[in-house]
Image (cartoon, rainbow, N blue to C red):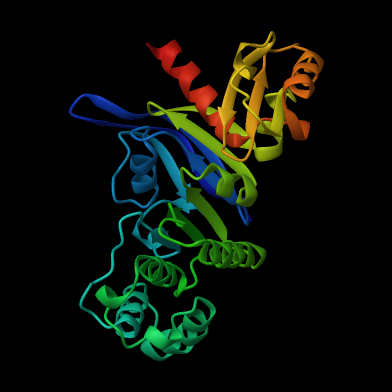
Amino acid sequence: MNDKAIVLKGIGKAFSGHVAVKDLSLEVPRESVFGLLGPNGAGKTTTLRMVLNILGPDSGTIEILGKPADHAARDRIGYMPEERGLYPRMVLEDQLVFMAAIKGMGRKEAEARLGPWLERLGLADWRRKKTNELSKGMQQKAQFIATVLHEPDVLIMDEPMSGLDPVGMDVMREVMLDLRRKGTTIVLSSHQMEAVERLCDRVALINRGEKVLDGAVSEVKARHGKNTVVLAYDGDGSFLGALPGVAKVTDFGQYVEVRMHDGADPQPLLREAVARLRLRRFEIVEPSLHDIFVETVTRHGKEAA
């Protein structure tokens, strides 16, 4: 059996002369969580629509589970769009059973599977409510159930954590990891780098329609070196960006990430920080995916200009 769930080979797509995707090749391993990253307008949505056979590529080929990405392959995919696709005035339970039927599932089977999903995601008491009576987070959970109820082999999810509170995010993360353990392949498109870093086995970053980064999360972080220092402190750290060897300071509120120039020694930074701040944390780490994302997109933008 082919060990790749999705294979893109040199796909391209243009609209009225604008190149949205250019010679893009990707491989998504089976039973993995794969992060498709990129800034707004990078070509992520166009790529996903080609995988879903909503759009046809102008060039290149797409395979889903070892077969061409045709209409039959689409029934093996569950797609959760960022924009909710629920009927606002339809009763939740009826709507979810109806959506499973569209994917070829019988009503009785869909109803039997629906109950446990509603319980797990905290929607059991809302099953006879109309969608427009649900909160934003509840609608997000309902959209997720609509995506997985027919038990697809591949899940493609665009910003699945949007609208969820911390408890809901934890539940969604646990469910996704449970699905992967059971053999589901998950493609996750998100701007929430922390969630991507925790969930994904591999990531690919596209910018201006081109792939600019691809690999296992651990490999991607290792390639960018351990030249980032995490600092948590009390006091005024505005001087940090002006210290020798410091390339960039990113403030995350409760801590800052200090990116050092290649080959720079962080010891002078430590000495200055100890002398001028009350330190609660000083740790040399691999750069975060957030930092790698920003640096890679910025560099590629300058090279393309």
